[in-house]
View 1 (tube, rainbow, N blue to C red):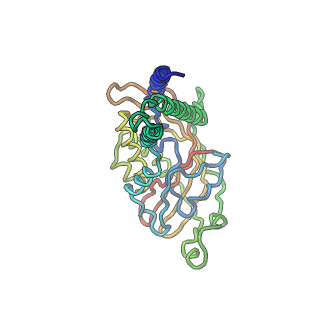
View 2 (view 1 turned 90 degrees about the vertical axis):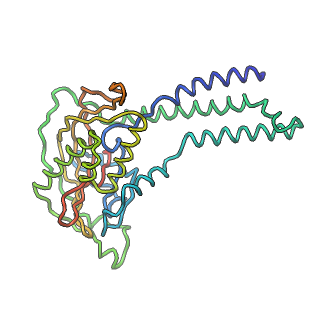
View 3 (view 1 turned 30 degrees about the vertical axis):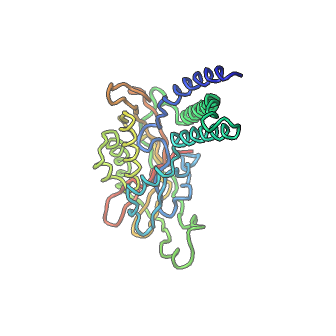
Length: 329
């Protein structure tokens, strides 16, 4: 194939790859972005018991910075956000490194062939064509991943779906039986989780927080989120809101209604109480362009159903706060 043909082919691939890479790979909307984030104290690495609401169990945490059980609020938002940022690979950085390697390889080839360092750059079109084809494949893979992630989300609620709340009636599993692997000896005994009983006021607080956290997130109310979440969860929410602002979109959530809820696990450790609750709820959720106000993802009118595990934390003498969100498996 001639150099001119390679150049034309490289330009064509560049146009297609550029169009794909410019497609906004928007994260799943609503608080938490459809991901599993946060902590469950000593049970962070253990799956919460399944319930009637979520018989398939829960996904593991994708973003988590578990803190000491004796001081569950030590993980601050900056630490959580920095950890999540550091763990996230940079596609642009990898692309620039690939282009730089291609240029260096072309120059070295020219030197070895006797035509000088820059003489080897005559094959640059072929190198760029190859790299742009890789970019095209990467774009297709990312779009495919996004497509299958959306397919795995709960389907839209059918018309006339019941909205009556069912009770938190799942049997409570004894946390002490699930301790295997969390330390040993006197140190483990000092923070041994103990099961606790919850009251109707506790469950009312969980349902209220479900609505209040969604409302604060929708309004980008950082003070409201900080008041109702642990520092770690606030860090994740703040990171997501900042990312939305950079992309020029705003996440709106409305009409949040709890349809069914079951207690999965409730325990005390250190200076705090924990409760993990499986909840199935409905909401209207869409991402809007900040400038035009047009919907770019989701629907402003269709109701969808979501099943998640929410973990709440209550330090001694304080109110319940959201400590983690896990997607139902």
